[in-house]
Length: 609
Image 1 (cartoon, rainbow, N blue to C red):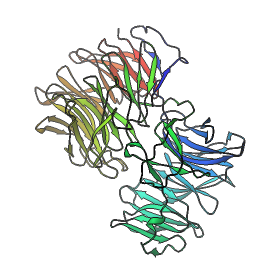
Image 2 (image 1 turned 90 degrees about the vertical axis):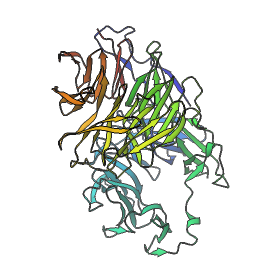
Image 3 (image 1 turned 120 degrees about the vertical axis):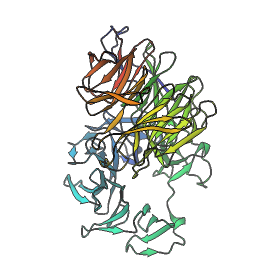
Image 4 (image 1 turned 45 degrees about the vertical axis):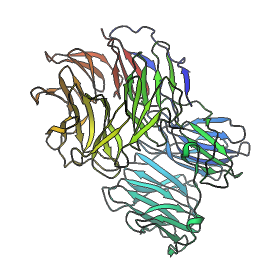
């Protein structure tokens, strides 16, 4: 499904004046449904499909969809980008726990259609999944504190029940299971992994199962756990082991197979139908007799307006059209500067996450995406048909060992598209991949610099260049490593690796231009000369930068939190180009020198003087 819109609500300068940036609009709009359930709406006693939407960088919302009429209602949150935590409290209140930056807990009165004052969970950035336990209280997990929270709707009190893991390196407590009367189960990770059980009567938090076990299901009869050797079952009342025979067949069905063999999760409605979400669309369908058979669901667009969301990456095509990706939600968009029309895609692949890398080759757009380590090719001139893996087409994956294309992607000297990666959750490491645009062959190299993720990537006519650092998914920053600037030759591998002192963290700001390679660390720019094979200069700048662009010949542009500055690479002269509204997420420069850059969900245009 594709959506074409005209950004008529914004005022534009039709021909921006040289040297003065103008707002082009907010063309990146999508849904990112992190949780769903159903409610019997007290206003009309009708069942509604309830969705919790995350709007990266903006304000999230909840959506009510009438399962009979398909009509939708939209209710923006008081504050916060959105929620993993979502609980239907007796068809009376909706409890929402938000994530990123600050964890807020929101309470929505269904009958009054009104939000209560937000509750702040101090020190926590994320609320993860939440559940209603048998004591009529709501429990949830968090990041980065790895704690178990308790919310009592009767008193409107939120309690911190403490860290669920003794390992200080563990930051995640997720998910939480509340279906067994008398207990709350919570999984933790990612440095070490395991399960804890919280006893509602005593308030004790105890180990459950063995290290690395993962809960598959909790219900009123049994707890199903995936162990290293297979499934294990425990009695939901006594927590004692059960024989394995017979219980696997009793496990709840949670996924159906839809078109092209893709498995999609669902909830069961009161009338027995199944309801689910796939990217920008939802479905309601009858339950199949055979859950392993394909169900041809009818995907329908979520029936409210998609909010603006943060722009993750941008590039441009040969016609001057801007292309970008959403900060969370696995979609891409295009924006036509001439007409001000924008288009937003459906999900680019079946995995959740976001598109980091975007490179045009032969008029086709190469995409690299988190969380599955997916590599795709999209042809804008052909009809969208992702569901059948035709357009965009998944050409390969570097998962599960590599999952996050942190460094994004670049066109290499060999004509291949190269991407720099971070390793899977709980692992320090990274890798490099290449896609041949003609043959669509995918190759990958794991840990070229051991236990370090790739954070920036660029290329010239001969080499690939990348930087590394100590970040990792699910783990705190590794301060014990030395970050590297690396020169890689296709067909050979690492030809030079320059280590930096401990404590100096390199980032994504890396650019090859006019015979030099420039990269950033702290409040400095380093310049590497490929001919001399050494860093020839380090230049002090006013602030941290994460985005570099080539403004014109021998002129670098770098964005700090409030200004775009040009640097003449020959003379060393710096000049303020223009003020910017905050931290810039991405930028691209058209052949005529026009600069497009992003700040959260907003796209700006600058015609150079």
